[in-house]
Image (tube, rainbow, N blue to C red; front, side, top):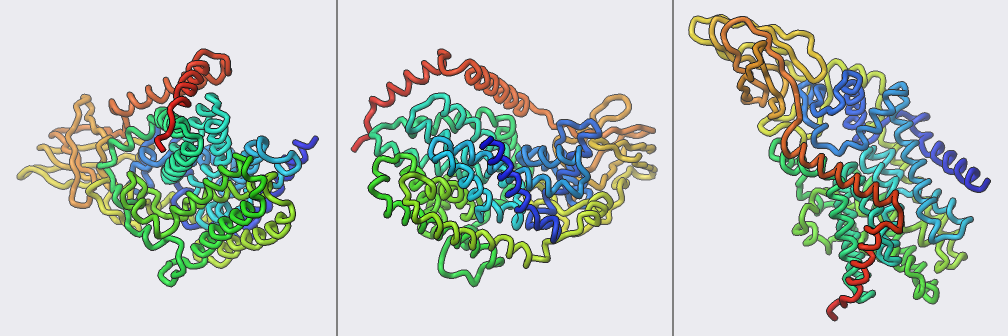
Length: 552
């Protein structure tokens, strides 16, 4: 009965949190990037393109390979909801479902650390966490939002792996980290560094390198599980404008007393205030409950996570941002507030924290929790009429992320006016005619007639995975013009040219095999249970590692 009552409470809180979408309208900084991608992926699925790679409506119908490069989970959730719901309801359902899963995740993760009656409170506190709500309704960072839904589970399995030395939890930690890698890469990088630093700190206390080794093993297994996405993305990054996300602007967004330079002051001040208040409260909890804290390894771990994540947001961490591998892909230091939001409920409601501090904390956190909704209401520029937008996306396409524009092309900022198919070069005295049939999803068909070889341009970006063949099955050579548009060299005569996007390569096939084998092994080990020989083997390794002392 209690689980049912608590579950209803989570559903009600999630419904209250998405109420602004029903009362004010859709919006968010990244809304017009994610929503059209869901619609487009849904259309590709309905057309039978289940391994979609090319987004034809991106860049105002010039296309881009976002489905090859962007982590697939959030796109799949949005497109999946689009199959069953009217599209005007999909954004609300997407955010509502994320809030529900967040609450359930915290409810499950807190069972080892909190009293039964406090678990639902932890769920509510996490669901209304300013970073979670800002990510959902102000930023509409759809992919990062979903990494927050299982974030409490990451810390649960980390604690069990590091402190309880459970091999099963190490594997489950790898599964949640692997899921993060295929959902949002910046969030995965945040967890990579935070977990490793905290593991190193715990290793010093335990006088054993096992925590670091366990964390590294979990990350390696996570990478193997996510190899089908990570390996091709890494190998093919030269095909796009990846430098668009490697900016040095992170130096402008460290927490500081100067904020006159910020483009969205209310937004950043909300996140900075939350991080600073959370750290202040955690410090207060630690100080007032210091007698109980000495024996409470869980609370010590939550404190360590909080302070490590907070340091990454301060100007003193500038050298870390500059030299740690791939850290600049995180882009914004405020993304390190995600662990802080998950730690605060666990610490506030822990047995080490005096209960007299709960009510003042509730009041203070409630006031801060209102700020994202105020920012959402005031930021009217991001609110949209979804019906009008859908019509625009279907007719004229949509503006795309700069990093996914194919290399050698320039991202358009407004609808472009290129002929769908046109003749670029012909031989002396020759004639060349081209007609583009009604394009199918993931395919183009050209009818050409010429007295000599000629070159045809299509109003779409060139990309290596496009392949053109004539009616005899001969592969035609392709190139790109100064705009980055696709050029096809067509032979003389009358031909039917088919152009298909087929994202196949040795790297993609090999990495898919690695992920499948890894998933098969992990699934088999978890199903067989703790007594399986692999668990015994990992346990023997752990006991051997425990014999190695950290050099003082």
